[in-house]
Length: 130
Image (cartoon, helix red, strand yellow):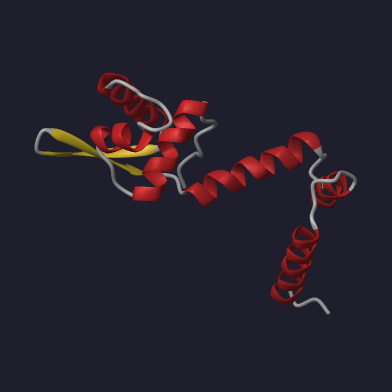
């Protein structure tokens, strides 16, 4: 398995959201998709796509005069790596400690708590508990 790329800058994250949402993109697709958030020159987007390719987030193939880029790392896999890193770095590897931290704040709504209960129940069934 290839090594997971380390991080995304805020602009790279915006671009990767477009790539993940569309699956395959050209520089022009990304530029148009980001126009409402960031008015970037074509060359700026091209440079960022090349950086993302060097970092291992996207791969490219030539179609006519344009490169077509596709993600090489899924959003889910990258997000999970980030979540595991946060748990390890800030909560000594303890998921319950992280959840306890959030439970002590006003960040969890009643709906969030019901969703967490459902997640725990599904995990219990998956692992044959109860």
